[in-house]
Image 1 (spheres, one colour):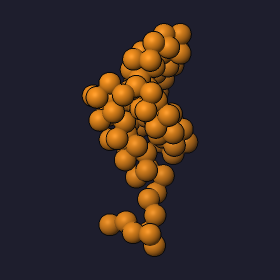
Image 2 (cartoon, rainbow, N blue to C red):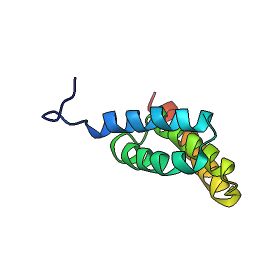
Image 3 (cartoon, rainbow, N blue to C red):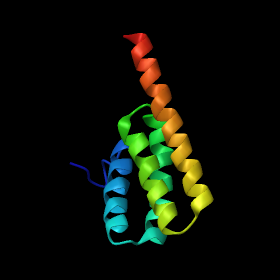
Image 4 (cartoon, helix red, strand yellow):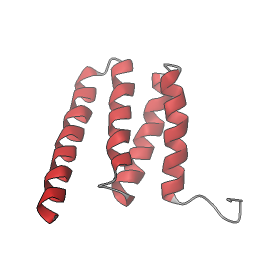
Length: 96
């Protein structure tokens, strides 16, 4: 349990940002979700670069950008996510 004496770890903060962002996306509050998802993604790319949650956050950010009609930015996020997912799969297969 966290308290003022025990702040959230970066991973816990990213998890909370993802949950809140998911709710905002369901409400179609694209403008509010985008900065939270960007912060979440920044944390996850540093602390969990190959974790599925990082790729999921990229996808959610792409959805927020589509909702805001930032199509070029959304395409860029989608393309990056696809490439990283494929690279991750290839690396796992090579290591097995």
